[in-house]
Amino acid sequence: MAKRKAMIAGNWKMHTTVVDGCQLAVDVAKFCTGFEDREVLIAPPFTILSEVSHVVKETEILIGSQNVCWEEKGAFTGEISPAMVKDAGGTVAIVGHSERRQIFAESDDLVNRRLKGGLASGLLMIFCIGETLKERDDGRAFAVLADQLRKGLHGISPKSMEKVVVAYEPVWAIGTGKTATKEQAQETHAFIRGFLEEIYEKNVAEQTRILYGGSVKPDNVDALMSQADIDGALVGGAALDAESFGRIINFTL
Ligand code: 13P
Image 1 (cartoon, helix red, strand yellow):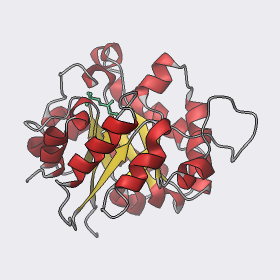
Image 2 (cartoon, protein in one colour):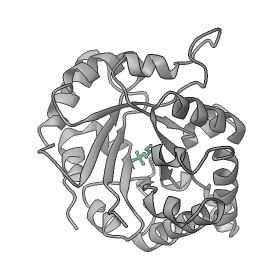
Image 3 (spheres, helix red, strand yellow):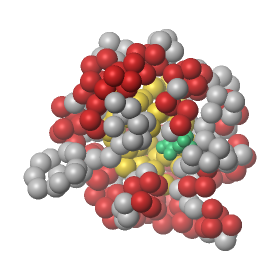
């Protein structure tokens, strides 16, 4: 099996204006030094996608949006289409983030439509899943993840899976400073990969990158990345500080 390329993605969430976002991108780019074994992505807010893409144009940094609609245009107030993401210089979109699911009540079905829409337009899609603390404490984490995977990936062909990256973000670890231990994360990633094998086939399961997200920091990234089924990180808070994100990008095994 060809080795899966690592991906370190920074989700800037609802942070940064034009000036500080562009500066952050310039500073992050200094830490990207011609990697062959990893990709670096930043997902700024919609309002500065275009400016930040421009800033990183000559670098290896990929640009992604934090969400995307399934339609190319039309009466969808508050949404952004795959064509708009591409027009702004983006090649990637995140869907199904737990903040979208929990705060904005996005259902599995909606996430599935977003995922299909982005894929149809050729975007690389980061599909997020994750259980709450209560679900984990009740012993239902794997059942919840299986359900999110089954519904979110409904109707997506094995071929299209080449353009899907799964991000496992336990809700209880997001922004809390509480990371899953490397063993907990590895166990869950292995479960996700096994489930992909069940609903697709071994090849798909082995080629699909699975990122971990939830309080990834400079001091825990190496341990997480050394796990067999952890192929990258989706970083929130620490992605807003160039030094921290730079260290995370430069994880060592
Ligand atoms: P934190 O790294 O701030 O926990 O956020 C994780 C996240 O939600 C990335 O999408």
